[in-house]
Length: 323
Image 1 (cartoon, rainbow, N blue to C red):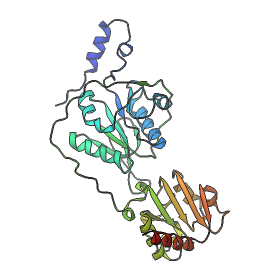
Image 2: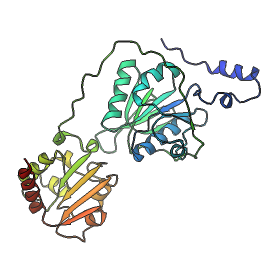
Image 3: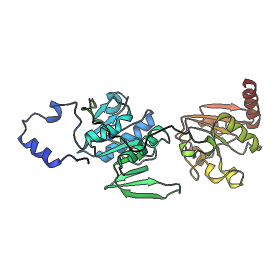
Image 4: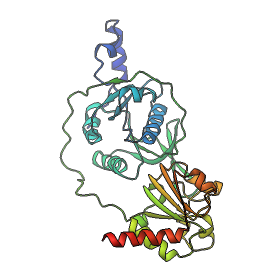
């Protein structure tokens, strides 16, 4: 059984303690009822998790980050304390500090898996794909556009990149040292190995490498061979979906799926406004199009002016020669 800190006992201790601030006298000990944040590695994950942690912590609770980011980088995101530890110590951190909540990014990979395993191991409540926090409730996104699930505030939150939260006032972040951590009891589920999902079946919001087809792609058999050879996740523009050539869950854009891929390749897609909004969070965009003045070429980090199908044939031929 985990006994939570008694806030009234803390208040009584402050009344009889010397006038010196308790935090200043022991800066390395994170205060009780803190919000533990795991910002991830990318700048986007840091921003998303920090916004959620500050919104949940408010003014009365400090935010403690388990991160490799420097205190200077975290100060702009209103983090109070940073501990240079790997997130795998989270079970021991929970047993030792009994924090108010733990927040991780919903990245579809390491951190998502870690949060779910932590909830199962310690029998904690969890909310996934969290897009809003407030009044003791959380809102989680669903696969239905505009539909969200509302639930009471859990102990573990996996926050979505689309989370709506106000920017917080920067703070001075101090580097902290955790107290001796408790031993986590044996038992519970154990991670034997991680099985990566097949790229062609990966949901578009979770995909890291996406190749999408537009009106400039007429041979979809060639397109699927190309996607499989690269180990990418297939996507499509709206016109291919509306014509029935690609399934609805492969559509990218405001009326389909928003993606945040590390690499996005647009084959024969001119770039309607709705489609460009759907790829706004992609890190690197490559456009393959015969029209180098199209909107997609203006958005892309790299534009190849050529026919999409000619490009796919040449890449596949090159890959065959390397085998």
